[in-house]
Image (cartoon, rainbow, N blue to C red; front, side, top):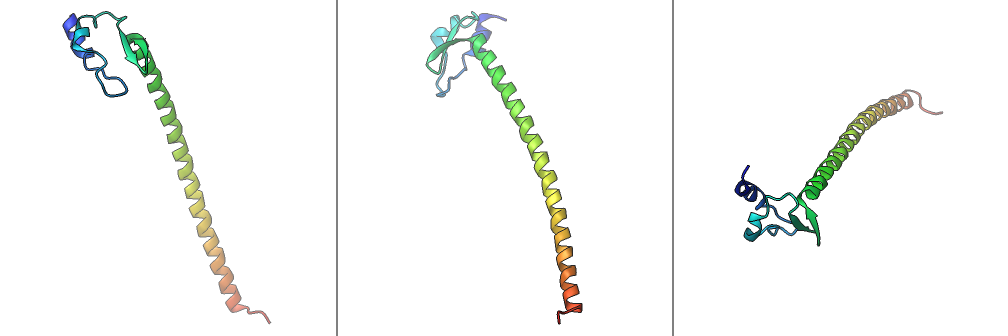
Amino acid sequence: MSSNKKATALGTLTNHDGKRALSSDDAKDVARPTKKLKSHNRTMTIEAAQNQLDGSASEIAKKDRIIQDRTREIAALNSQLATAERSLTIATNAKKRLKRKMPRR
């Protein structure tokens, strides 16, 4: 891959403010993997930035799995709650029927 292709691919990087992280003057130096980028008021190599992104992606995936597990647990608990509510309704109606048939004296 030539330097120009790398410069084109990396020239569109932006920092957290949405500003271009690399200027057109930097395009010639981008091919070097140790080119430093400004990120959150500190310099970071391209490899370090990529490693940080990979770590963030794995953290997001882990939290997504936890959310999915909790969602399944909530669905199971909602099902149990619905069953308990139906049972309570049946018992309440039966109690009312018994009271009508056998009033207190």
